[in-house]
Length: 309
Image 1 (tube, rainbow, N blue to C red):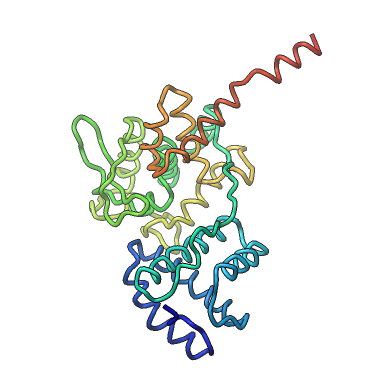
Image 2 (cartoon, rainbow, N blue to C red):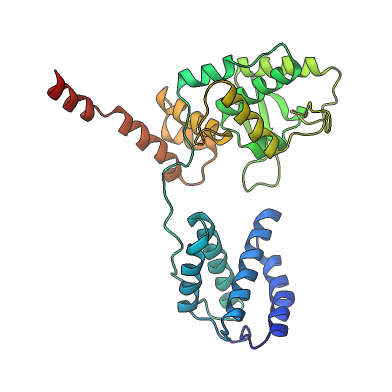
């Protein structure tokens, strides 16, 4: 079980060509996941070669992790180590090389959100500031209200087509391709005011083919083309700034946080919120609940009342 022993650059290239081809065929995931994992493994082999290591061990994995921590975010380090854990589990299962990454921990991640949610008043201020007399305004209003009521990610909004809006029972549903899925098998219920805004926008666009993207660019250089995730993020940020909500902690992802918070504040359960946001692990959803519980505490007010009254 030593066929991954590295002695020279040419052997490293052989590993890349032979072992990596078998590894990528084994991975079950989206093309982006395969690309990320493959890049992580190749980066490790490069590090191994540069450090003159012929037979990497668990201690080498740990040393590599510590070097990654110097100039990489904890989430990146976590992803790289996760890729190595998957890879060496596979090499051991295939009888190629021992699982030297077994039980090696990644990086400690901060469970606090990097972006802030919006309050109810701030959401109203945001959508109320959009001029809906223009095509661009109608689009932005429809897109932002969709995102803040359904928790859709920017990539899910980008992929949405007009034909994905369908009648399901007595409501309108928007089918979308969720995280880690290959097809548009999941759906979001579209609230009546949001559906009205989307229909208003589509009418303003004129005659449209149902296969066209749901949200398109109105810029001269790419008019009519599908909005990209970058464009969606930029549009949301510009609308936030225009509404006087200018902070680096308010971005397009803040709308998704707002979805979770608003649902919990207005009587939604943890389980329902988990399903709404498509969280695989309910502990991710629990972060929102913990924030709300902390916000409800009256300890500081009691102390202030005792001191100042």
